[in-house]
Length: 239
Image 1 (cartoon, rainbow, N blue to C red):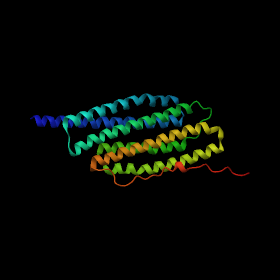
Image 2: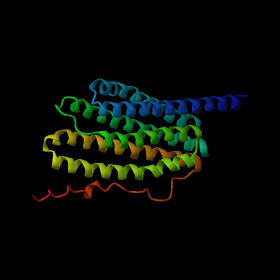
Image 3: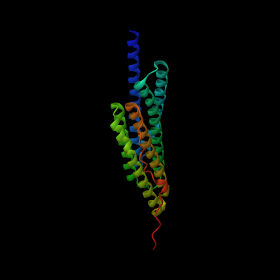
Image 4: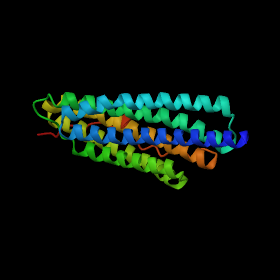
């Protein structure tokens, strides 16, 4: 009887852990969406919502950490149960960082809302929506423990990197042609890097989902399409 009771209690704890991770993912997806909305305005009020929402994500990460430490110490899980607990700890850490980067984007939106002329943000928001879609698929992959969907999320990271590189070049060109927009575009470049990093962390989560389901991390290298370090602005046209 006591063994059955212990097993039932452990199953309940695992369910609570999964719920906490899913709630974190839900909040992060919301935060990223609001951060993109705040950029598109730019809208300081929406940005303020993002900054206020970060505390709940931080609190949930601490809850997940406490749950995992307690389960490891008291339950001594084996095999897939152990993988799930270890993966949850790593996933929570990545989700917390994603929330932080969403906050960074929102802070840039606050600054942009004070500028007399807003720089063009359409390309950046499009890239951000790609990352937001990755987060939605990442959440579903975790809930369904779907390794194939996790792999597709991982594959999207290269597309986000390529979009970021194109965006970097676009903004460099725009700043060369429109010096009055240098301040705004510089803030957008920082926001773009934060969004690209959110995509990186979503990919980390996807890899941990693969570990959870299959018992191993993906063996192939990630696609690396971020070439912004080599991007240069084109020379000005000669009159």
